[in-house]
Every structure is written in structure tokens, then in C-alpha cells.
Length: 438
Ligand SMILES: Cc1cc2nc3c(=O)[nH]c(=O)nc-3n(C[C@H](O)[C@H](O)[C@H](O)COP(=O)(O)OP(=O)(O)OC[C@H]3O[C@@H](n4cnc5c(N)ncnc54)[C@H](O)[C@@H]3O)c2cc1C
Image (tube, rainbow, N blue to C red; front, side, top):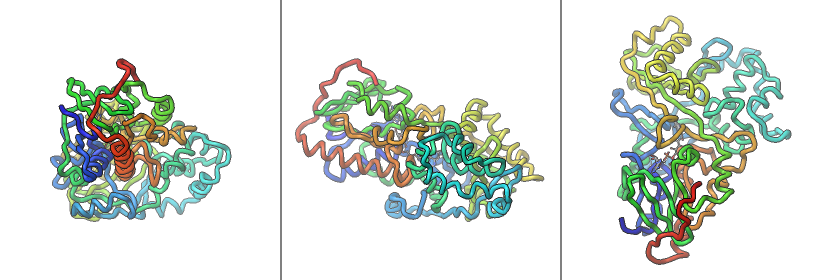
């Protein structure tokens, strides 16, 4: 293949956003993508139920997310899922959140957000923080959920410094919206008219000041004056892609300090609804599943529940295999909704395990204790004509979201444009030390 101005690695939200911005500025851009689709971890399944079901990202977080402009331009219908319709499983009972909060056992944890922001003892794990604050019993359960329900790491793995730096706690405050037409229509809209080379699994990236050359596992190559890496952090950390020359120490430190964890979804279709009509989500302090979402909340859509597992719970589901994971989720639902017979009402099921997906190598990232600053190391434009995007490179307003990916694509497009402006001319192969690894 001939040389282009910019090669973008990955056609997820970050990649297509960067590519569109660069192409819009007149650059010749090729996106190389290992899978046969656009969207990456935004993936909608349309053959499971009578309405689209999300296998990956589910919500637009917040009313001011940067992605709203494109959601509206694409004409996508969105429906809010207000937090006040949350149900919680705490202390062995499944109840509407306001009723759970009436129990004196949880009151002790009400100061958790203030305490986190005032922490002056340095970074520590969520488990150490809970211990230090002496949150026990129901308060401990609520604290564990507040700190780690959304993250793919356990309480002893997630750092509280990273939680604050990543803005993760804003997820508890903002209003979530579900895209009724399917979230994948957003990256599809952004990718309209782009040159995307599918089935191109990048195996190595040669980079230098004068350009980049990416080589696929099947030997195809694309040369460009600049390159944008949007590979998921899990793929970078797996070592599946070689960089030549080896990446700078600070970049490698960024990759090593960030953690990608397991996330799995069990999609469950039923004959009829057996959960409360006004239940937007069920958050579980204990059990094999972290959260349940009815996809039809506030709509008259089909009775589908998504069982969402994060961190250690997702790892356990991943290991037990699909059939067992479905059985475990059904038994868990029977525990939450006494008298319901979910196994008798089940009409279809599917398991989506992001840990074993070689295009993701995990769900998304979190920062272990001491890792604040690692996202900036990963994002830094310190590799010649190769710049870095992807949702793991962003920490504001909330790290590792679709919005983060989108913002990273915009930033990387500006960095790549600056490289093109500095170095006019034809695509050149980089002067690289062959054989070096990350
Ligand atoms: C189950 C789940 C639920 C989530 N829920 C939400 C949510 O509700 N709201 C939210 O905002 N975010 C959510 N997220 C996070 C969000 O999906 C991601 O942060 C975001 O989509 C990542 O975009 P990206 O472009 O950075 O990476 P990706 O979407 O992963 O794109 C990277 C692309 O690179 C490709 N690729 C991988 N390896 C190679 C290779 N070797 N060569 C070429 N191409 C390669 C991949 O196929 C992929 O298309 C969720 C994620 C998961 C997994």
C-alpha cells in the first residue's frame, strides 16, 4: 500500500474521531482495524431481541458530554435513566435506594465522598481506605460499591487517588442516557466516508521523527508521515504489538502503571418482566453480578436484562464458561426477586466476555494505588511522528469512557496535524532499529 499522510490504528471512538478531524483538515488518512466493524468497545447487538442491546458501552454519561453534538447530528434517540430509579442489594435485602439509605447501618458511609477528597495520607487501595475510615457492615458494603462498582478492579486493587483523579465518582452524580437506536450508530456516524482497512491486525509499529510504518500480522504495511495509536490499553499491555524502536521509558511506565480489568455482560431475554417497572438499575453489594439493567427502562421495549460484572466478579464469570455464567445470573436474580422464576421465563441468553476478546484484552482501565499521572505518561506526544489516543489516555471529565475516547481523538488529531505542518513532504519509512520490542 502506498504512503498516506496519517495512519490511525484502531477504528473505535478515538480512532474514527481522530481520523475524521484529520481528513476534514485535508489530510489523506487510512484507519487500520483488526476487526470487521467500526466502534471497538462500542458494540451493539441487533439479533438478540426486538430492540438493540449493548455488548459494550451502554450510556452517555452526563448532560454535557462532548459526544452529544454528534449524537444529535446523527439523529439518534436517547432516553435518560435517572439515578433515583436505582435499586440496591445491601445487607441481604434488595430495595429501592432511598429505602436502603433509611437504614442507620449505612449512615456511617455518607461522608465517603468528602473524606476521599480530603484524604491527606497519600494514595492507598480502596480496601485500605475503607479500613482506615472504619466503614463496617452495611456501611462497608455501600463504601465498596461507591468506590469500585463501576471499575474492573477489586477493592484491594483500585487506588483512591486514581478514583479522584479519574473523575470516576462523577458517574454517581450525572444523568445517564441510553441510545435507543444503538450506541454503535455514533462511531458509524463519525466514520462516514473514512478509509477504513478492516482485517488489518497491527503486529508492529516502526516509528521515528520522519514518519511511521505499521505492519499487519499478514505482512501488509501502511507508511505515513504521522501515526495515531488508539489501541486499547489492554492490548498495549499484553505486548501483542511491537514498537520499533522500543518505546521511551516514561511511556512504558505509563502502560505498566495503568491496569485493565475484566468486564463481562450476560444478556438475558425473558417472556415477561418480573422486576419492578421503575427499576433503572440494580446495584449488588454481594453476589456474582455487580449491576443489572433492564434495557427497556422507560420504554415499551422487550423484557431484557443485562447482568454486568466487573473486576473479580467478571473474572469468575469468564472462568466458569458461558452456560454456567447464565445459570449463575439466573440463580442470582431468583435471590433478588423472591417468588420470581427467571429460569422458566428465559427465552434467550448470550455472554459477552471482554477479557478474552483479543481486540480489547479486558473491559477498561483503572489506576492502582500510586498510579496517578500514568495516563499523562501514556498520552504524551514523545514518540516522534507517532501520537497517542484512546480512552485510557484521558482523565477528565471521566477517564476511560466513550467521551474520553472522543476527546482523545480530537487531541491526537491536533498533535498529528502539527506534525504534518512541521514536516511537509511525502510519506517516508522511519529510520528504525529493527527487532526492538516494547
Ligand atoms: C462492557 C463495557 C461497558 C462500558 N460502558 C460504558 C458506558 O456505559 N459509557 C461509556 O462512556 N463508556 C463505557 N465503556 C468504555 C468505552 O466503551 C471505552 O472507553 C471506549 O469505547 C474506548 O474507545 P477507544 O477508541 O479508546 O478504544 P476501542 O473502542 O477499544 O477501539 C480500539 C480499536 O482498536 C482495534 N484493535 C485492537 N487491537 C488491534 C490491532 N492489533 N490492530 C488493529 N486494530 C486493533 C479494536 O478492534 C478497536 O476497534 C464500557 C466498556 C465496556 C467494555
